[in-house]
Image (cartoon, rainbow, N blue to C red; front, side, top):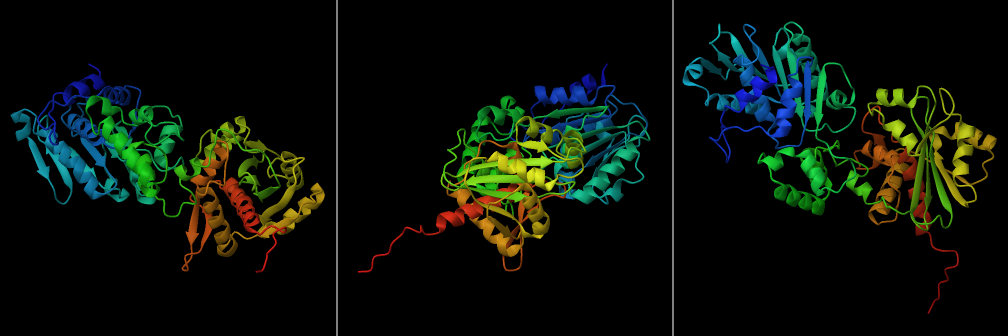
Length: 503
């Protein structure tokens, strides 16, 4: 009999230990059976499941752990099953769930179980030769050193702390090789594409089975079909039902801010940071600026440019203050290729998709040549009246030479990205977005840039723009902030034709 068939039969022979359905037979939903069959296939060493919160991830992992310890499909002597979680409290939840499921085992099996709560959370089974153990661990890599597990379960891997979580994962995976063990990694989505859990999903690897329930980005929070995609258990009485999810989505939309981003991260299983205090704009705030039809190119245009280096992107943003129209384009050197660069930056094929959408181009070999790039930037608004070009004064020398060679005659305004200029520009940009004065077509380039753009604060609470992660590309966001902020200043200046009449 296949290992997956044995596992499904064993789990469905247990009873639910807690909650409103306590005491009823445990019935696996189709998406759970799909994961068990894929993760326990003969040629698979690692199974990865990403699904929204409340879809019985811990219950499924606990049932698999209990069956593995009892030798339901693996008869190795002295089987060792490790359940790793972000914190000791989270590990204790999984341990208690295993203990609860064990109460539905035959009495002779139950008599062979030994429960330990100190110094570590363990359940040992003395049957079948003895020495079989389930051990719960917190995300401290040292606690897994020296182990030789036959099965490892990583619970909520997408939300382990960066350093200690990586250390624990490496220690667990290195121990699996000693006994030909398997790893099951189960979690809601990580906050970004660069997280190790996201890399497990995005980077195809031999011997890895991946099952992800994540909707397309940019959909409304209460979109029914995508809610069901992220919460497949809702159709089968597992976790929250669709009515509750839709109500919570509407509440999150009404409150906005952290309530909405948290709902998207945990309940919609989207890759979005749950930390909103220092984001320049949340994903929903930016999506409010996206329109299906752009307003006309009317009046003067302001151009914001952010010149990158060999690794970073060069970007230009074009803003028409009269209508609020915003356009943005990015440019990378041709070497390395966009596919290789995307893999190195942890965004998979996103750069290639941006090029296909006409939002990203390549120019030069190792670096983007300044003068030819500026010429391309100006061709984008050929025939338009350029009110000003905004650029970072830190690169004034290099840009000024490039502008001279490119024949740029428009007025140039140099701005800093520190707390002084940066604070004013970021606040003006935010205000323009909130007031509906920024309108852009759906842009993967800008969505990605704003997802990585955060604001650092000094002791006086002044802000400046910064990257959320070292490999984030916020150049298009920086250029947009420069252009929109200057456009806001232009709109705020009194008209030269205004006359004051004194009574």
